[in-house]
Image 1 (tube, rainbow, N blue to C red):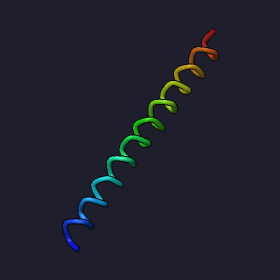
Image 2 (tube, rainbow, N blue to C red; image 1 turned 90 degrees about the horizontal axis):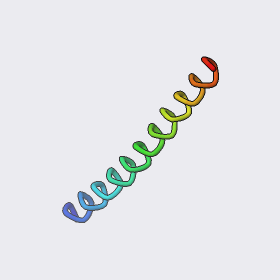
Image 3 (spheres, one colour; image 1 turned 180 degrees about the horizontal axis):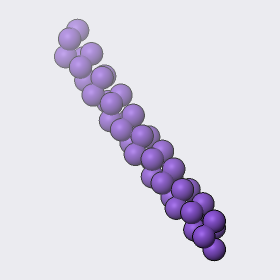
Length: 40
């Protein structure tokens, strides 16, 4: 039971890490675009 649970947790963390990375990437790009349009 324990190894299977750990495996599931690892997979969940990897998925969360991927979506977290994607979220912050998009958020960062939006802030850069916003800053660019304000300055221009």
